[in-house]
Length: 151
Image 1 (cartoon, rainbow, N blue to C red):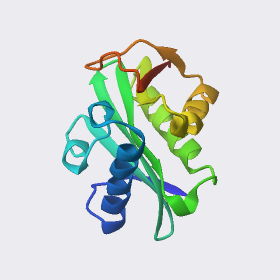
Image 2 (cartoon, rainbow, N blue to C red; image 1 turned 180 degrees about the horizontal axis):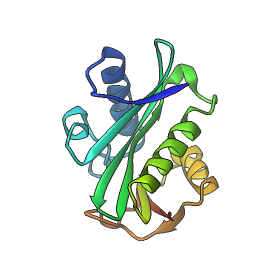
Image 3 (spheres, rainbow, N blue to C red; image 1 turned 90 degrees about the vertical axis):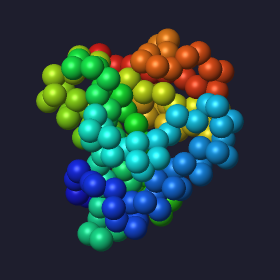
Image 4 (tube, rainbow, N blue to C red; image 1 turned 135 degrees about the horizontal axis):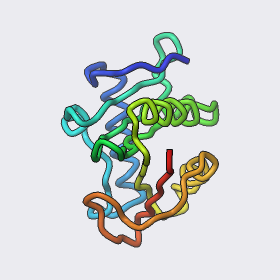
């Protein structure tokens, strides 16, 4: 698996982001969807990575700088054909390492509180993320949980 910075222009990547956004609409009400579309993922404070097996897209993830010491994990998604192959784990490890290299002291995330998001929450817990109050521009929301990790 090769993980590399991506410019969000390949058809496969655009399709995966659209799949990610559509998936959010299946499990979250519109006011509780915090997933980013293509244009927002291209902002300078966000670095977006994709994971590949040759020419096959396996998944993606992003890191948003909230301030010089605090990053936010965004847009974690595994392609349907690559579920349960460790893709999310490898991308998460990559992003945690990058956050450490940048000198962040904290990495946080928002994810859904519904049952569909249980595998994601368990993965984050496994990597030392713990539940916390809303951070950044987030507000309390019964459909969201917030997690953070000290680096």
